[in-house]
Length: 566
Image (cartoon, rainbow, N blue to C red; front, side, top):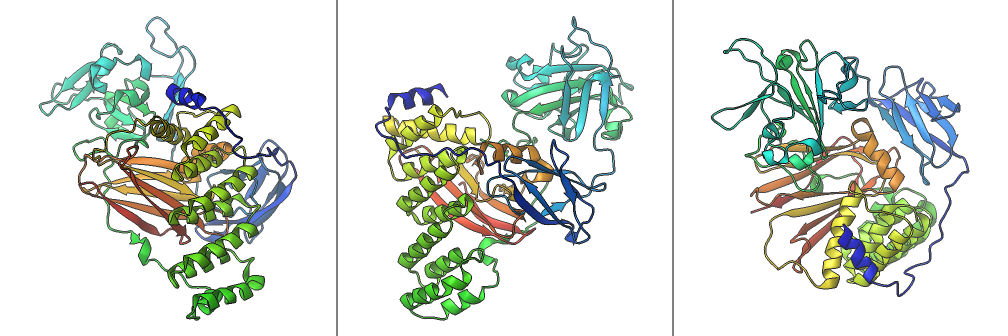
């Protein structure tokens, strides 16, 4: 990371790339309203409270609520039979339609506690420590069983495997390797020689009978429990104890791992061909689009569009629907751009709508137009990291590399940092590639089968599940929902980013599928998803393809695209 900063500092600020007006967080209250549902039916008696205040309301018998709140407030939605939800209010938030999920009445979390500490043996951490893995929590402050906590830094990194890395770290630990090379851990004497019970391995909530091949550098922490007998979470499997491992990346590595077929550290779910290709999905056309497309001549259609403006311009998606009619019906990109320019003016105070317009421009290669839009967005959202990344990347698309670096310089001078998580990983990777372009040290033009994919979405409230299907039809899921990943969504909102990247390992030859199931965005407007697929990333012969998808159908698994890594 240091090389990035050094390179940026070598490029002076030759100009002020744009004039920014830094807006203070809006402290004016506004009305937030919506409908709360459960499995599509209105839900009454849901309590809505502004966090850390006594101000609240509840839904009526139609599931409707209204409350006044300000930007930066957090709304808490609670119901006696439902999982609680928290939503951060943003600059454009006015509607929040919430779909709640039933609370799990079964035992979600098991707490095992410890009363003693032994600083000499290191049996327990020096400070109280709670470790959670897939809904299973170990509280080493109160456990009645013997617990050994080991941080990732303490592991024997020369041990190659996790089984060997734990040798010498746990008293009475015995490693048994079978004829296939599988590693089993024996933590205590159990049963006879024929019925010996080995410890189970729990990695990010997934249970394995033998040690999975985890990269040691990805291990965040390990907790070793000599007995979990009687715990419903694992049953009789845990008689021999458990080795609980949390990794820094979860069960899917966002930077480089869609696991290979030879790797048993993988999901056991297989694809059942239940996705519908995006280009096969269709939705009913609005009356104004039917009227517009009944005209055979593009210029006459544009005149009709102008006539329709006064009646329909306030309708959600009007401009984009019309623009796409000129693109697909008439193959007229001039009128397509003219409609988008009108849309820019209409949406000039709405950063999410402006972002959708910029997506359209980038998809068609109209980078100057996209640049103009991203400059408008950064004035509206100068505290959002995504605003800077978008501007930097459109400069790169225009091959204006020094302006891109100057933008990075401005970004750092304003006190922002590139963190090694979330959008920080994306920006660090892109900054390294940019400095290589400036210094003309691109990697040689050799073929690489790795495929880099960047996903970006228009609405910060969008919830969805991404699926990667490998050539062996194994499924890898990434959940972007409040119920499954609320901390990530809160982080995105606080830092201001709506993007994520993945790299598919090209060593696994064959066809990959990328599916998405969309759950909505708490509003009535659709979410637009932009995907950019890179081949030969970071090289002078880099190839990329940008595609924009309009997501409207909820709970429909959609096949976005296929990737061949032969």
